[in-house]
Length: 634
Image 1 (spheres, rainbow, N blue to C red):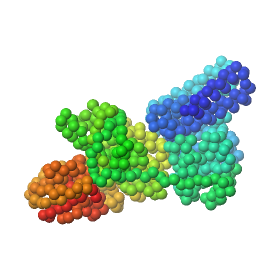
Image 2 (image 1 turned 180 degrees about the vertical axis):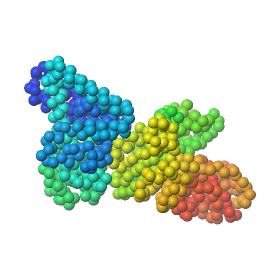
Image 3 (image 1 turned 90 degrees about the vertical axis):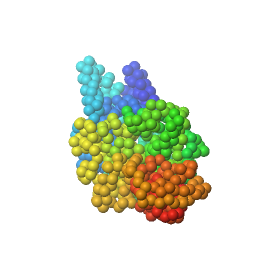
Image 4 (image 1 turned 45 degrees about the vertical axis):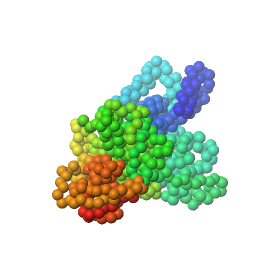
C-alpha cells in the first residue's frame, strides 16, 4: 500500500513538473521511470496473489499498476504469462517468456532489455486459445486504446509530450526491470525449474544495505521462486529462516559483483562478513489434545457463499479450545445442533490449512437436508454450534525435507478434505509436487474455484489442476464428462508417492481399483467417503455379548443385543460415544479392541495398518466372542 501510493504520488508530481517546466526533462523522466519501476513490484505481488487474501484486492491493485508498467497487456494476461515463467524457468523451447532476456547473448542484452514486453505479447498470441474470452477482449481493448492515444497525440502535435510523460519513462523502467528482475537472477544458469528448483535462479549477496532496498528485495530472487506466495518484503526473513536447508540443496548464490559461490564458499564469505543466520523449525500440524472425541460449543465467525448451493463456515475458536481443535490435514469434525427440538449431527471435513489458525468447513446443500438447508438459509455470524474435536486419518504424515509426488482425485464437495491437504502439503514440503484432478458440473458449481486458482498461481511450478466438467459444452472435449478410469489413464504421472480419493462411492472404489491395478501400494491409496454403503441390517448369525467400553478415561460395562453393533450398545446404555456417518466412511467411531474379537461389516475409513493394530469402526463391529473390550481413548 505504501509503495503503491508513493509511486502514484511520485508519478503525478513528475507529470505536473513536466507539464509546467518545473524540472528538466531528464529529471522528470527519471522520477516517472522510478515510479513505474516501483509499481512493477505491486503488479508482481498482485500476480502471485501476495498482496491480500482477497482475490479482488490483488486484481484491483494489479490492474492499476499494469496501466503504468505496460498499457498493452491486461493484468490477467500478464499474470498468466508470468506464472508460465515460473513453471518453465530457463527453458529455451519458448515456454519461458523471460528467456528472451536471461538467455540472450551478451552483446544483444542492452537491446533486448527495453523490449521485454515483446516476448510477452508473442507468448500471449501463441496461447490465445487457452485464455478466457474476457481476458483476451480486455487485452485487445488496451492495445487498441494505447495505439489510438499514440496516433491521436501524433496527429495533434502532442507526441513529444506523451513521450516525455510516459513513453520514455516506461521504456527506461522496462530496461531496468528486465536487467534486475530477469537477467541478474537467471543468466548463465542451465538448470530449469523442473530439473532443479534451487539452481534455476540465484540470490545475490553483499552490499545488502543498499542492494535490498534498491532492488526491492529481488536480490533474493531464489526465495521468490521457491515460495512465490511470500510478499517481497519477507524474502530476506524467509532466507534467514531456512538458509541451512537451502544450502543443503546446493542453492545458487552469487555476490553483487557476479562471483558464484558454492555452499561452503558462501559460508566462508558469510563468516568473513560477520553475518549470522539460523534455521527455524517449520510449523507442523498437531493432532487434537482431546483424549477422545468430545463436543464443545463454538461460535460461528463467518458464513460465506462458495457457490449457489454451498457455504463456507469459519468458527471463532476460543483460546482454551485451540489445542483440542488442533487438526491434521484430511481430518473432519462432527457438527451437532438442535433444529427446533430435532437434534441433528453431521460430519464435515475441515477445509482450512492445518498450518493456519482457522477452522473452516464447507457445507453443500442437499435437497431436504436438515442441516445443509439451515446452514444455507438461517445460520448467522454469532450463532453457536456444538463441534466434536477433530477425528479421521485421511491424510499422511508430512516432512519438510521430503520430495514427493502427490495425486488427488475429487468430485464435487469431495474437494473439502483435499483442499486442506493440498494447502498444507505445499506449505510444508517445499520440494513436493501435487496434481489435482477435480470434477464438477461446470465452473460455477466448483467449490473453492478462485482459491484453487490462487493456489495454482502461488505454487506454479509444483501444483497443477486438471478440471473435468460434466455439463459444460464449452469445456475442452477431452476433459468433458465425469472422472472415470478411461479419462484418467492418459493423465496419471508414472511415479506417485501418495494418492487421495474423495467423492461418490462408485467413483472412488472404481478408481481405487484402477490405481491398484497400475501397481500402487494399497497403503498409499487413501480413500475418504462421506457416506458408506447403507446395507440392510440382518440379525441372523450374531449373538449377545458383554462389552467393556473405555471412554474419556472411564470404564463402562454394557450389554449387547444380538445384531447390534458395539456403537449401538454403547449409545443405548447412555454413553456419549463418538459417531457421525454410521456407514463406515468417516472413522469418527474408531476404537481399539483390547479383548475378544469383532467382525466389521464394511470399512472405508481405516488403513490396513490401523486394522492390524487392532482398531475397528464400532458402528460396523459385531462381537464374535462372548466378551469384548474396546477403548475409544487409544
